[in-house]
Length: 343
Image 1 (cartoon, rainbow, N blue to C red):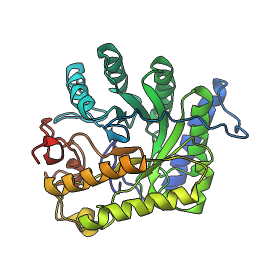
Image 2 (cartoon, helix red, strand yellow):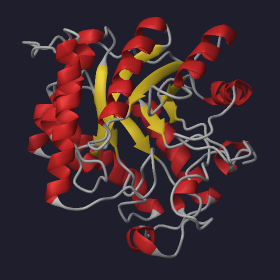
Image 3 (cartoon, one colour):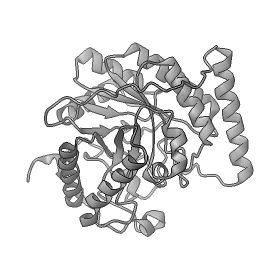
């Protein structure tokens, strides 16, 4: 999603020199560490696709959720949620979804997986690996964490998603494709679960995306009608069109919707004010959510809705900042209209 950074808000740098210097550092760290441990993988030829487990039948079958756990006073790299808070979240999540997407493999991820096992929650996890070109040590920690957790929790980790919006042109953490491909190959060589990468439709709909698609078991697609200037009545036709275009370009790979959603508030300044044309609010979110859920079920398209809970650490300081308001639940875990069941 445009302007959103799940790690640190506002880490947006400019300049060709910085980009390629940081890319070089990342390449050395990624390939050097893998080679030193004997894990630098060759290209698998031909790639033998690993099947992403089909969703169970039932009302939650094709509707999954994106999850960030951070409450007020918490943030990635800072204070993390307690085990009790994660357990509270899982009780809420498991009432509505049986598949949850995480964006990283360090921090709270292991506790989250452990609680799923200990408490017997019927939840599968798409485990993330956060990749950024200017943070080689963190990238290595993410990769090693995902390898370890996928092995330790094989009944819970359904797949691993290496990189989030690293290829689309507007991302603030663009990585050269060869670096992403190296990380994807390493993950497939060191795990047995399906491996994917998540990116915007505006990358997956271009011919150059085929090189990355060739390295994954399924495509994880982001498509946000709100960020792309659509009104509410245009949202579902637009979403369906983006999915159809990507499916046509990549007929040999399953396509999963990794993010789509509708915010309940936005600020009237900055990029969000220029790009977002549709009306925001709980009523509008409910309309889009219900339509998207119905379409996902009817078309048998696995869809991770963005997102479970509002997170006030995201975006700028203004309380109306759109990044804070994509949750189907408020920060205090009270449900918004889409999930209240009050009509």
